[in-house]
Length: 567
Image (cartoon, rainbow, N blue to C red; front, side, top):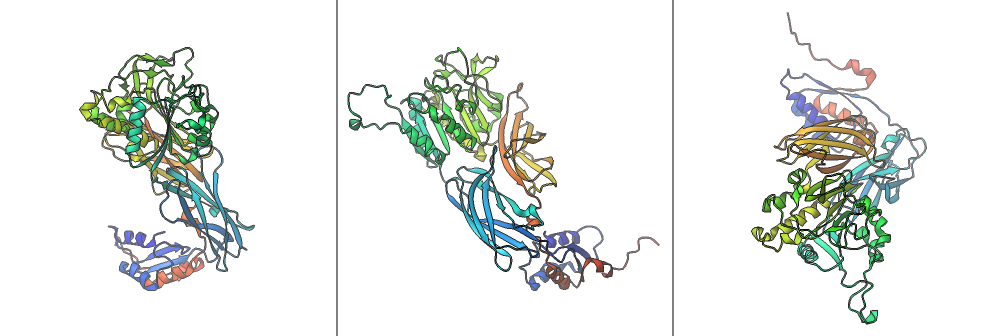
């Protein structure tokens, strides 16, 4: 509690100046805090010019063990060790010696993942500290749960658990690029990935198939076998994103790893599937576990797997409004170059955002067939790009108008969206002043300038995925902040997902989405240390010429002279 700021605000009020203040508190204050000297306390409060009387609301601490504070040493970076310094306190005569401590990461679905455990040894003063090293394998907002196993007799279990929100950065984006054959499209993407200093790319290209007759023994061949088992069972979690480009899963042993790749997405990984004769349905991905995390349906029945007819993709209303296509459209306008064909896919799956469609081909529902789609699946994101002609944004007569820059702008935005780069998010959302369980929570939504329509906000509980609130608000083109009342939430972690539906959108087409995770604590910092500080209240009263009393003696406080308001 910032008592100094509260008193200063009251003293500046336009109403009649107070003759005195009465503060009822347990003395556990942020400002003036317990580390302030008497001189500092006097300097902070004597400018009020009036006495501050204090009433100690409590004189004894409950029997309690708590997580008093969690601190980090430095910034949180994906794949890099991070040290958590955790302060444990025991008070009220509770017998504490060795207190077990655990740090877990909350997941969208399922139980939290244990990151580290340790033991805090509490000294005679009732304070113990333990350092836990954790490594977070994904960038973005992560919610950590730090909990203790309190001794018997703990009277305040609500402060046994604290939640820490970490904005995890990345040193470099680590990308696994697997291509089924050498093509212009593969070459263009590989050149761009290699040229970007912020990307650490590991690339594999299939130059011969297992069935090729090479007329030589394996030890005489320069080409190494594709290390599919090592990549997808040992090293997969080290990558931020996986790009499967025109790659057939069956001949190279990837099929058995598709469930692990889908789980990788569920846990926060990014996946892009790029089209070609060996992608999507022809690549043997239909009716697999991986198909369920893609944003489009792959079960297309008897339809051909590819359509070799040239076409110009159409940009949807959602595509024109989505920040992910803004850099591309700024260079080329609304007209894409002609593409040499496309994979055939079905309708977008629930939650997908379609940015480009085929001009003539339709799905089983009669809707235009998706060409570029974005999807959210649990904690991860996926992209389905059904064509293999994006290189025409780099080298073609069409590309010359933008000096070939359109290709880089296109892929930089796709990879950035996959990594939740704020540049490509349609909005930002956060809980104003944090979230305290049982108290009214207000979310502040800040849409990007230039967007107009409706913002739909869904709040779901981490762990169960249960939707607890559905909110909506109109947004204008100016990007003005919008406040939404989220009501009272229970302790735990939550995911707030925002969908921006453009005003010119059509039908039930899904708009651009973004997500922010946050946590609600029971009591927060206010309950972390329940020990009263009567001495602090006495110092405040003494510094201002006031009196410090206990509740039974509150009636003895000197009252200022009454102000006559009428004769």
